[in-house]
Length: 357
Image (cartoon, rainbow, N blue to C red; front, side, top):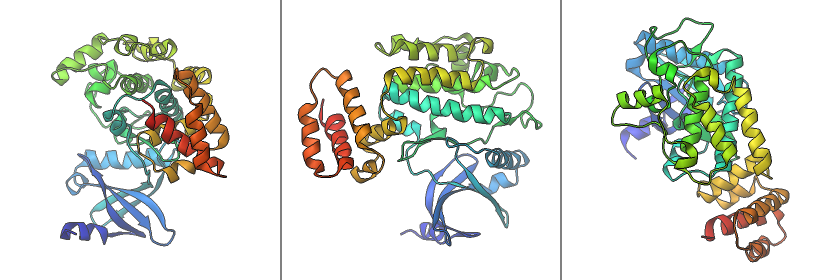
């Protein structure tokens, strides 16, 4: 083990011991840690030393902590504490043991039903944030994670805008990640909660197609396409995508905010209506099945979250989507399961979603 890695692993932050590094961004470093008395794993987000002395970075970090502290929602990562030690500042947050949506998209497009479930969960999280007058402003796949239990977690409110606080950025300055920014962000116009719905439309489009709707050789080209609403419609980029889902994306990507969904709750309801007509199992079970198919879960981990009823629902859904019979494979899965109904679901997922072409 390198000296630097040993130093990280033996680092103490209040009641927390650092277990290792999780990632680094332009403003912060994130560690995996554990509360030594409670034995609870956490994520420790440290504002980088150079950023601590920068007033704007310091203000953004504290503002993100304030935003997270006010949230109580299953689809938003929880904040446990804000720790200041010497010249360092840390947010102690819920540890999410799972992949980011960005990592999953890099492996290939997501099924339409899985994409809709994720988008509906994010819309629910946004509805909660918007009710508290917080606009995320940087919604993108890298800021969304899936847990091993089939939950969706929205993170990183670092450039969130609180309508009740003074804005950190100057009027007219674009803030966000270029490909996911709304026309209002691109032009520096006044923002409201509907800017996040545009970004959610971009994210949903990318989940289903594997590509972003707005792209170019540089940020200027991307901005021009966003401003003018120039992109390949989802139903053309992915022939066969359910029309209802394509229409949801189309409405979310309207250039004029007034033509989008009026709020996150309305977009969530549209997605849930689509899911009610196309998904016959619990949404968490569908995400667990997807993660198992992507080898993001072990057999044992998947078994902890699937029931016989969900197995039957997933089997019925697969039969409706595939022309060939699944009966032989289900029989093998049942044999492998022995007396455990839970094991049959796991084996079924491995056989049906992994072995069949």
